[in-house]
Image (cartoon, rainbow, N blue to C red; front, side, top):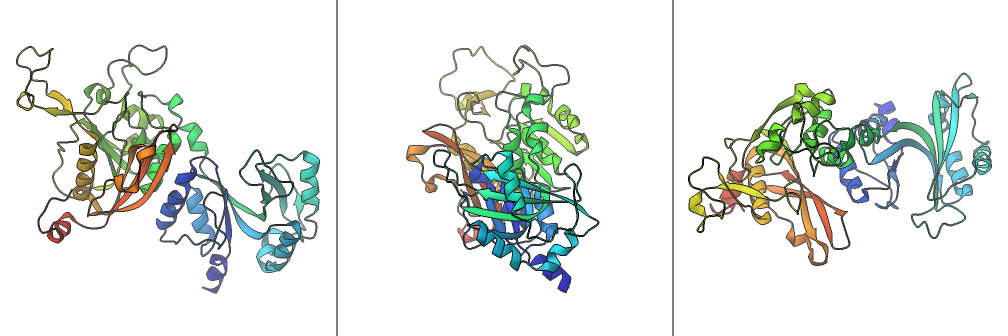
Amino acid sequence: MAVYCGRACRKYLLHLAHDNVDFRLPEIKALLSLRNRPFDTSETFSEKSPFWQLKGLSEDDIRSVMSRTVCGKSSFELWGHGTTTDELRTSLLEYPAENMAPYLQQNSTYKINVYTFNKTLVFKDRIKKIDALDFLPFKGTVNLKDPEHIFCLLEDYGSDPNDIPEEPFHIFFGRWIADGQRELIRSYSVKKRHFIGNTSMDAGLSFIMANHAKVKADDLVYDPFVGTGSLLVACSHFGAYVCGTDIDYNTIHGIGKASRKNQKWRGPDENIRANLRQYGTESLYVDVMVSDASKPLWRKTAQFDAIVTDPPYGIRESTRRTGSHKDIIKPPEDFSGESHVPVSMAYHLSDIFADLLNFAAHHLVLGGRLIYWLPIYRPEYCEEMVPLHPCLTLISNCEQTLSSHTSRRLITMEKTKEPEVCEAFLGGGPLV
């Protein structure tokens, strides 16, 4: 136990990508909570910084986070840090020698990398910085191609490219532990996807949504606006069984006009199942069905561990629901008598989100998460505009800016009460 506590009490450094900045903290917190570990950081923590110091964790905790995160680039066991080279030296000399010793043995190989954020250093300056670390008791042999141990000197020059200081604001030195999953953004790019549509979700954001939802192996994940299945692809990557529905018959069946440039019609095997087959997760594909989200077909039991979705909105994706001719006072101009095809009716955004939250309250397991995008007009936005539900607790609200006036917010909610409890609390009134 003493050995574990000694390792668990070490500090670790996360180096994060400087894109999707608003999504990073909820992702890391969600991944730590999968291991029931807290997010405990230094007093000088800055959410916008690309470097986060974490404590109260073990190396296994860090490796688990890095095996999933697409916001994190690299992780290190932090040996020393400071705002100047002298402070860094003092910090490194105070680091317990017994913690360093296993990685500095004479029969080992190593290399030291230099990383600078917001500044480029020429090769000779990098070498000078490495040489300045000669006070550390390295006994092994340098191996630049395949070392046993990798160390890194990281310098933070702020985030303003128009005002780069001569000296860094912060300097860190540590032992590399693991890299994040940034490669997934490239390998799962929709440009290489077998089946895509006009609004297929970006691969990076799809994985961020799956992480916010805490999707894990053997979960059952549902997308009520499945489209071409980008979110199902990301969730299945983490071992979850996936299913979905959509009102668009042609999309579900992979027929009709293609979305790719220089391709007029979709091919015979362009469908969601083929997307999962492309990435080796077809065995996790449950099914997708043509269905109206305003009239869910599921019995009222808690089936899903997570609901991850991108509701339709905007010009390219109109919102529709099915109705009957009785709901329409004036027949449409192209109406020509009886038809077995359901009438398409307007499905307003407020109704979409009310139905979605109510559905999640009834069909998520307790502790399950709902993840969805909320489009907003930035000049008029306020937090009160985010739809709420008495059975769901708001976990995070992250903004992705689209233009000076528009953005969309990724909303993460967790089911904390059963509908029966909420109804009793409200005296039998409506839930939403």
